[in-house]
Picture 1 (spheres, helix red, strand yellow):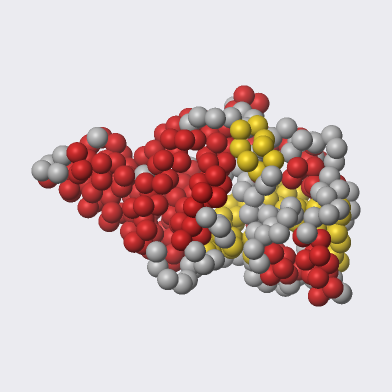
Picture 2 (picture 1 turned 180 degrees about the vertical axis):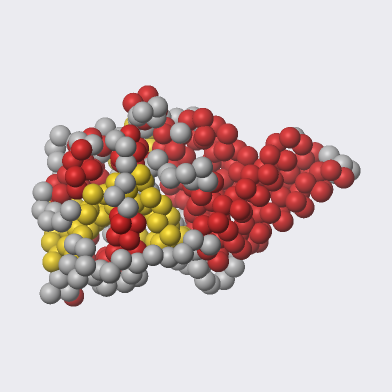
Length: 370
């Protein structure tokens, strides 16, 4: 127990360093003259979908195109998309309906259909529950000044809507997921992309086989970055942080959502996922105290675990400019839930995505060692 607890505290110290390092990076903005196509795959009504989509249309850039895509002609998001298009009549906006029948991943099928109308050499893909400010495109384009960069991706900050489950979900993104990504990039550029932003040069996308190359994979964002890296290009992690509007209707929905993430991550990084229990030091320290309450070392370890977790929480809030009511008091519960999700994620090979049951593809077999 001591070894596990010490390893957990050590991880949090490293993660705190990684967060502070990320926060010290200067922000870069391009001049806004580069033409960009934004692809927005959408499936159903996300909370605050209208505001999210509008944010991608209101950009401080001279020439950009936004293509919205849905798979089904009866998708309720179509009415929202039409409102967005009406709000920006002078912008180059379009709606594409229908997927690609030969592609099993519904999001990739949507992207393949949308890409046929893309006009520009830089292509940005961003999930429907993301929100940005007017500097977003200029920040993304700035990293492409290096010709070695084939793709750019972004971290995202969880912004919780009202509700206990949403607060827990935002904590998972800000205090567990994001620090783990930053720790993974301490040794260099990431070898993956995140669904918050996957920006790629058209020629690089074509070199890896286009969106068809992602057709077999549930973790299409991870696979895109992996293929870009495999073809000799850098994947740059932008300093820009996207906002993820989090609205979980219930704790059970939250658990199902996070279990899908866990199994997907396990499919692409099996060894890393297996070792990630060290990212939850507080539950192990609590267990040690409960089992051996008279042990001084247990209480010291619990105090150290709580101290470094709180320090990392505050560092993340500053790095991501998270405002609103602090939720530090939820950290012990959040870590206990996270450890439980990790354990459940060790088993099972299917996930729920929207209203579909999908199988998890083991990417390590196909691409992990490229």
